[in-house]
Image (tube, rainbow, N blue to C red; front, side, top):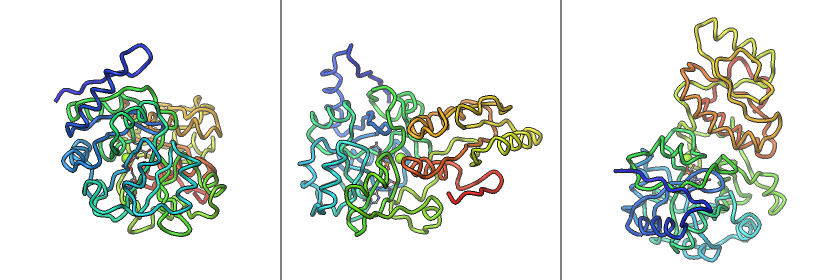
Length: 349
Ligand code: TXA
Ligand code: MG
């Protein structure tokens, strides 16, 4: 299958591009499109055959449910049994935006493979012009996981999608680099207090301001959980080809680690704030300015992917605190590293 990429910007006939995407989706095909978090690979969420094509294209395990994207808040009632009060508050405050709400699904409305056998469904309204226009023209719910091959870092640029899925999907809508860079926060509002199953762009602090206490397991706790509530969180994720090791943001440690590894014959890639550009690492991919977590989130997957284009044999990635969007960053870094540290961490993250 030939994969076509169409750029959606001011200078093109947008109407024609959207119609093409809508037609493909209505025909039961999959289409990749940008959201404010990462690129998604969408199919009509009520068409089981179409949704299966997502799993196939991604190589995704079939027990990992998909998020359903909608274009208006009114549609929620079509897909869920009841909307808890706290969910209403969160939708009004954060939609459109990077927050996925897990609620009790109405029976037999969505395709079986969307919910992967669970009685709940994750819903979100993305905050991106291309995604919203597409959803509102289509007037149907769209199941969409991140548009990467399963296990790889999520795509933050159309070219990442192309790298992973060329020949496997018919169309990629290119809307430039995504703003947030890591996936939406997933929160289970079927329980009280609600539980954050995956930290993301909408932080625990932001949520608690609206609805009071919520529970967010630390990255370590999430790793120790034997049956994670978000099924996707149990798989290796976000991983480049070379092994990733976490390392504290400490110049002396970093320089010593690079020396040791190079002596052992390694080619070292370093992911760290810009101020570490002067180390002797063979490759350096900056996160941006120190303590600018938004910048770090936006760059992380692109940096991890960039490592695959080098002959680095080991990747060192510096960590950050779990405040604000740092919780989401550390969650993804832990997964990318499979929990491995270079040396012993003296932090609790
Ligand atoms: O930002 C995002 O959320 C992106 C964009 C494309 O919207 N999508 C995304 O989807 O990250 P995906 O499939 O890569 O991740 C969905 C996560 C998985 O960890 C999955 O297990 C969890 O949400 N999930 C989905 N439905 C669930 C449910 N009913 N109960 C618990 N977890 C669920
Ligand atoms: Mg994903």
